[in-house]
Image (cartoon, rainbow, N blue to C red; front, side, top):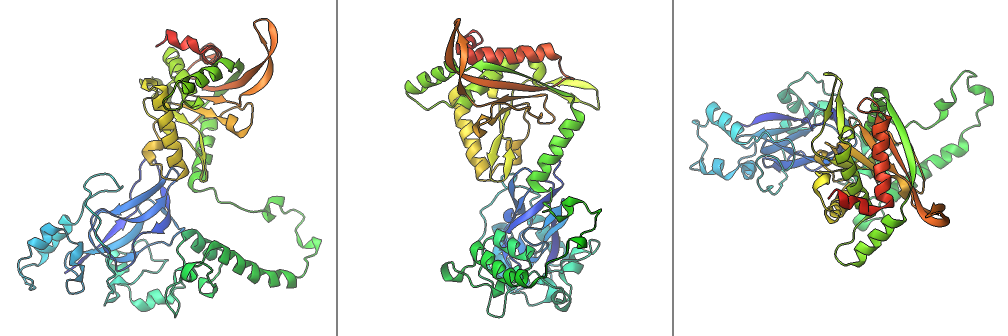
Length: 486
């Protein structure tokens, strides 16, 4: 007899307490293998495919695409053990369990003990793709359930109910709940839409996708189709709506009540929480200096003209930061507030700010102090491209000890960076532009950059911070200074 097990949203690490369902990779009735990815979720740090540690038949899914779930909330239920459809689900079981079955006849001897062993053999304990055992993903097959045990649960199922109770709820009760229009198959079959963003847009605006005619291949519904349908639906309403008198707005109502409200969640919410924590906990101070970067730009040009892989300006700045932190280790540190101790860190794991379609992220280059300019250039390029694709893992975004922020790419000269908690400092680099500069006693046009250092005043005083920034500026102005530290 099959046993229905519930798979809950696992702890994704790094203090993450919730995740948003972006895309389901399986449907009710599908056969899944152990560690097969079943759902793609977006956390405050990255997009993650979550594998199911059970092998069997999916009997229920909890949450629609676009729904935010807390860690520990049910994701889906899986029927493991004996197949519920005359052996049709046997393909989900590993070879070791199939080979032990002997003949194809059902036997009363495969009772509770064999069911328990089947459950244990079809469980891996993994929570993220790439960890623990990993077998080839089995081909998914649609199993049409013949009992109410595989009916989708109602969205408002009580948290206290057991997985079996939720999975065996009568079909009539689940049908009585009002499902989302984007996920309901109409009388003529499934709704022809693939993108979860299109589904979410329609769901948020209350649009039934069955009423939309798709303009894509084979009638696929595109975002433009949904937007046209919304415009056509709302235009007559706007034309017929009477103009509200000015007196209808209460005199004491805040002006913001009429504006757009954007939830602070996901990446934007994580950024807001981290910056607020930084400002609340860290007594920061900022110092800055203008530096003549003409020689640094000339050195980079000469290096790239010599052949081989191109060296990025960010890689040269990273090399300068790593050497500066070796001379001023006070800034490669963190503060343990519980123990009231400053912890100086042995290695430089350099974070760098990267703007992506999802927002600002800070990937981390491991052991930046031991890398060459060529290695740093390759790693910056790899992490930047991964960030733009939204494929950074939590490991790529954590563990930094110092952050380099090149906001000059936005066309600004200076800024006062906010420290990336729990680090102790951040170096900001403005744009490099031609400016009048006194060079060798004469006025000349030079390539000038403004450098800003924000530091935690608990780990050092202004003398140390000023010494660090001055050393960085000296290396920018005279790259040969680095030769003394190699």
